[in-house]
Length: 340
Image (cartoon, rainbow, N blue to C red):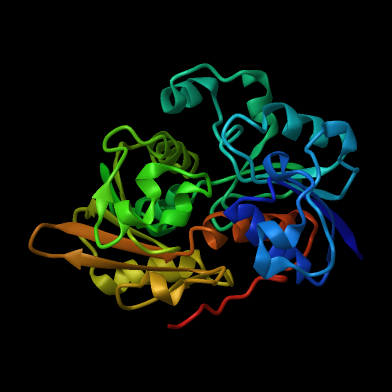
């Protein structure tokens, strides 16, 4: 079985990773690349590391996009509303890395983005894409989870749902600059981010409502305090999630046991017995999770590390596509990282 694929939004970092993964996938044929801002440019000019052949990027005009089995959208916020819907209506399975259809209700979307969703009646047509926690069986429209929510939920959901911890949840996360995308911004220039660390979106980041939605989907209703930090590294994301332990509290063996049970048989999440590092997962499509019990405060500290461009974006999209098309979920996805 061969499957055709298109990448729309191919000029960005996540789009480039989609191209790399699909080019080496044993069952996908990447037949179309679209990037409105770089239309007409040779792929090798935009992504020199992907300069195989003489492919060029096309305009993302809906009528010019061919009917494919799988359409991957890696577009800025607001650009997928119509295009994602139209491609799905034509018959393609659509995998949207953006946030346009992530929320299950217009009210949550408005909290996150400060404006009404332009098509709230369509939200129920899309499945939230975090495969280890939520089934994609029968899905044809998948809105992939954001990078921060992916890490926070992988670390916390089994512990909360299993009764070993309670809310509220405090999530402190660190991410490399590629998580902010490829657009030219003065606050992301080398001189601004090198040799320093900074918090941003404090108490206002749009991923907090998404985290609370995901926890509720897993049967946990609680509030989240979320603080993201920008690190002067290219890629990688580390989430540290602090939660009150249940009464009576379990020990660390209980915590690791429930994480191990939750991810048993899932090739893209590994439970480790020490604090994970971002360098261990750079270039890899897997996430590393662990948890500790702090007997001094009665708190549980759970952690997850992942590559924000892979398990937090493009890799998770390909994983979702594998599942939608009945393939083994890690098909075409490397689980070894780059070191050093």
